[in-house]
Amino acid sequence: MATLYSALLAFSLLFASSAFAAKYVPFEGLLANGNFEEEPKPKDLSKTVLKGKYSLPKWEIQGFVEYISGGPQPGGMYFPVAHGVHAVRLGNEASVSQTIKVKPGALYALTFGASRTCAQDEVLRVSVPPLTGDLPLQTLYDSFGGDVYGWGFRATANTVTVTFHNPGVQEDPACGPLLDAVAIKELSPVYPTRDNLARNADFEEGPHRLFNSSNGVLIPPKQEDATSPLPGWIIESLKAVKFIDSKHFNVPSGNYAVELVAGRESAIAQVIRTVPNKFYTLTFLVGDAKNGCHGAMMVEAFAAKNTVKVTHESQGKGAFKTGILKFKAIDARTRITFFSSYYHTKKDDFGSLCGPVLDKVQVVPIA
Image (tube, rainbow, N blue to C red; front, top):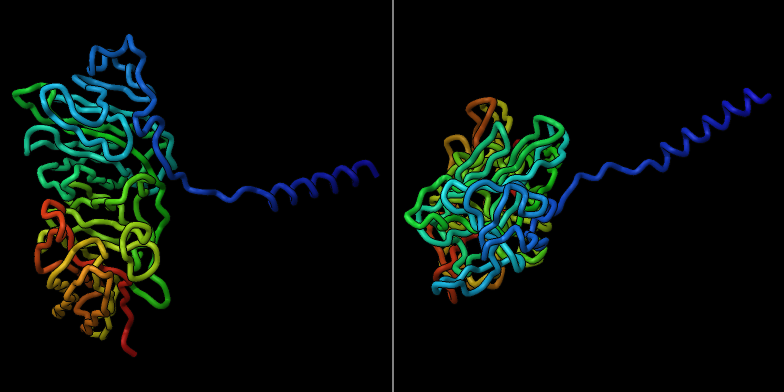
């Protein structure tokens, strides 16, 4: 009887534990001291210069790294720290790094604020071995210095080391990129559906949005990041596209969309499975983000040997329209591509790049 009771108790506990087991929730948020607001000890600072490999809490540093407070600086410079109070400035050949726990095989996106402080040719090198990407900071997408970037990688072990490095050598050894917030998000896999051959077609899966940022996240081109932080999509251009949210922008469908902010230098594409000689319909939404981007807009879409141009006369009120392209597949794989035909800046801020919004892409076979 005691044996039977023990067996029943064990079964009950097993059932209870499985029934109430917590669902796995992918991690999303700042890295440890990712906003650099946990300040170094006074003994680890010489004016603004960090002294010692472990002088920056939760991070390792190499080379000439400064701990910066946003605002006017000695010598007349001004450093915008758009996502907090403090940031780090990477001098010649300097770097900051942090080792984090990850899930092997999972796809991750880093989100971070970065801007140049001196020379136009400053570069921020991001690495998570074996991947490395150089992000040129020459183009200021936002005139107020609040540019936020996304960068993707796939984990190959239980822990990885995230490193931000200034590979440049300037006349002033202190010159280099400003890094003011670092976050991470584990991305969910994306798949085509019964109703849509395109993956992540509404852009709902993408990098973390910094809670105190209203600028969107710049997704760099594939030559700067081989693993896109926007699952399913390839940035096939010289410049970035912007991942935007409905909290700060007009988004035609769902919570997220993409803004094509650099004209013909800002293109996005995806390769989908098709059946040769079969006909398909590609539909998509084009509009403006209600962010001061005015004027004649045009998005060009390509699929197989077909193309369509969709115009949108933006009044800056968040209007949108549907584009349609019918095409005949040539191969078992078909590339669909979108780019903006024109360059745009905001009506009240000519230093900030903007452009048409792309959302709700759908590809279906024609019966």
